[in-house]
Image 1 (cartoon, rainbow, N blue to C red):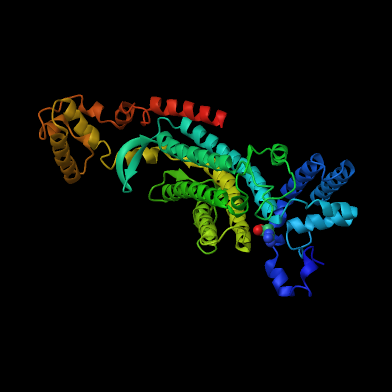
Image 2: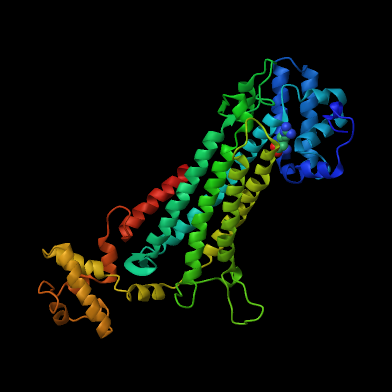
Length: 458
Ligand code: ARG
């Protein structure tokens, strides 16, 4: 029998029941639901709605329910309506009428708004740790590659020489912002909705601050209607996860390209590669491809919730139950991708020779050649023009700029002197760029120091 069946004259249709049920996905909220209920009953005890014995009976039974779910002796019934109803039912089966007092001054509307916040808080902590752990691997790899020269690209064309460390630390910055974004979301989520009840609060003299304190919330929500109808915190978190996945996906894309025979910048470890059922020679970057692919579903989940919420009148509507499969899937996906990506990345071997050779090929030091002339007093535009001509000559002669003799250089400008070869070597191009955020070993080293500091305090 349903707990709300009083005003109904017949049973719910079986199909409608199944359609309505959320237990298949919200069962994962059992721990937070029980913790919320324990805090709620303690508050009811504090204000005298429950006697001391009743409070004790309820909290003790709830704790037992938690333990038995956790140790596998209590099975969450798949035919329950939702996790809230299931736990309340087990509670009343256990302690009778007293259990039925738990739902005083509460509705499932504020209950779910509470549970999901508590759940997301825990999941975000885990995800933050996973990002942190990936960030450490990135920093570690960067530290070992401060002098590993590679071409930096724009338009996927060789642009200017950078180092592998510099390139990797760009990803550190992205993941740092991802961490900050998630923490920002957590800050806004840190307000307790319980006490809003169905939508209009309650006439009982509840102590919301007390419950919030028990559950570790920084404040209580300010408007009962908003408390039960707000899902912004889920949407912005799904958005933060989408951005995080976008960063992972770009990283994957680069590794896939670097892993091609044509680039050969990296060699994947066999443990993270897959073969082909027909082509015996194949060694495919499936892990990176799958992370890139799974980014799509995380974007999809964001759009699903945005669309569910669009046009919903205040306050609670059952449509909002659809937020859960979407946000749960985003969380599961992010939690699946981060560690496997980290391990795959950690096992890569970088082909320093191929990177250096490639950096030497695409005239990546042409800007430095122009800068040389600027240092001799020419305007940058004129220097640019002269350098362009030198590049064009090199293309015809099948040479790199470094391979031009001083006499050949003099064909383009009298300002070229014997120091030009040293000036445009890839090492000096990188080393000269010592400004904050630049690729020189010293710049990247100080970035790494700051990055480690950030991870220590976040
Ligand atoms: N399973 C519901 C959800 O996820 C819980 C809230 C139900 N509230 C209600 N008025 N039926 O949204």
